[in-house]
Length: 191
Image (tube, rainbow, N blue to C red; front, side):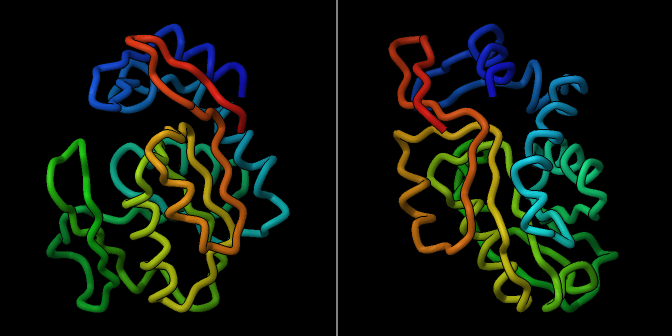
């Protein structure tokens, strides 16, 4: 997705340690025009999978999931990182390593919003080590639902996450793939 790559080159910041800061347009401040384009692209790519729900992780996955959900006209469920007191006892839980939060986080989804008849499209902001995405796949599988696709806005291919997901039988698509960082410069690969 060329417009996304251009925005990464213009406003993304390589912080070292494999971290790309994109909070000026995606992870803190959100560019609604770009997010609409991201949603339209995910919708174009995954419409044939006929999802009944989109699943993401709070917080940074919500914007692209919402944009895609509006285009596909399906509800969005986001895995919470802390279980609220209002959540039913019956829930699905999986832990995932988080570089940005340090350590592990527990992802929780209420059984009210994910069931065995669902066809789930998993969307997130990044594919790096695939820890969060793998946890979302396990959450979906524990509900008895079917994962019909996995989409990420940005993939850092040098972190090996795609290989971690090699056992999934659905399409895995990233809108922008980064092969490496060359100092403070982003070097893209092919999607």
